[in-house]
Amino acid sequence: MFNGSVHGATLTKESASVVIEVITSVQALATTFLEIEDSGERARSGEDWLVRTGAIHALIEMARSNDGLPKDNLAAVRRHWLKDAGALEDGVREVGEMIEDAQNETETDEDDGWDELGIEPSQPLTEEELKRTKKVLSVLRLCNLLHQKVITEILSTSSSTWANSVLDELAPLSPALLSACDELVSTLDSPQEADSVKTELDALKGVIDRIRDRLSLLYNHPDSTALLDGVSLNQTIPTNRRNPMEKWFNTCFDQILKAIQLAAGPSNVGTES
Image 1 (spheres, one colour):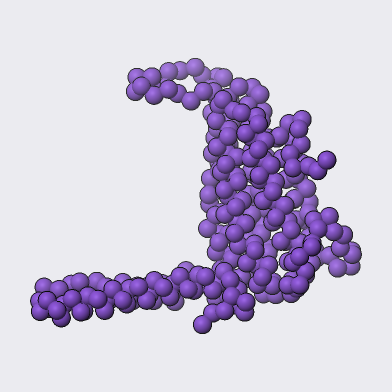
Image 2 (cartoon, one colour):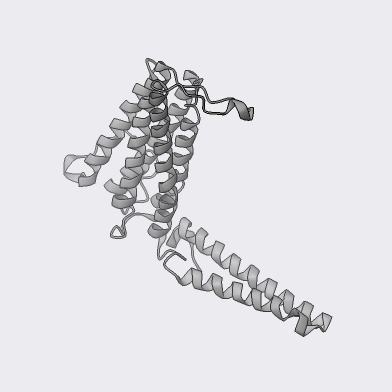
C-alpha cells in the first residue's frame, strides 16, 4: 500500500482514488451476479454482467497505461500542473481577443444584430479600461510563462530529488493560480470596477508569493523537509549555494510583481507599509 509520508500525499491520493474506483466496480459486478442468481433469469441478465466486467478491465488497463497511475509523486504533481496549462493559455487568449475587439470597435460601428434578439450587446471598453486590460494581459502572460517553466524545469522527469512534502504543497498551487487568473479575467468586462481589479490582483499576488515560497525550498534545499517552517521570502541564500534556475525564477517573480503593481494603478497591492 502507498504511504503518504513515504511515497507522497499526492501520489497516495491518486492511487487511492483508482483503487476505490476498481473496488466499487467489482462490488457492482458481485451485486449483479447475486441479482442474476436470485432472479433465475441468467440469459436475460447476461449483458449486464458483461458490461460491468468490461468496465473493470477498462479501469485496470487505464491504470496501467501512461495516462494512468503516475510512477511517483513528482509525476503526480506534474499531472496536476499539466491539467491547468491549457486553461491558463485560454485566459491569456481571451483577454488578448478582448483587447483586439476593443481596438476594432473604434474602427467599425456596425450593428451586430444583438438588439433584434433582445440581447444587450456588451459595452465597449473605455480608453482607461483598455489601458488597464493591456496591463492585466502582461500579468497573465507572465503567470502563464511561470506556470510553463515550473512544469519543464521543476517538475521535469529528470528531477528526482525533490522532497515529497514540498512537492505536495506545490500541487494545489496550480489550480490556485488558475482560479486567481480566472477571477482576474472576470473583472475586465466593461464597465470595469477598478477596486475589483485591484482586489483580484492582490489575490493573485498572494498565490504567486506562495509559489515563490515553495520553489525557494525546492531549488535551494531539494532533499530537506525540516526547513518548511519559518522560511522568509526575503531570506538571503549564500551565492555559492544558489541553484542556476533560481536566477530565472527570481527575475520572473520580480517581473510579475512589477506588472501587478502597474496594473493596479497608483495604489500598490499587497505591499507592506
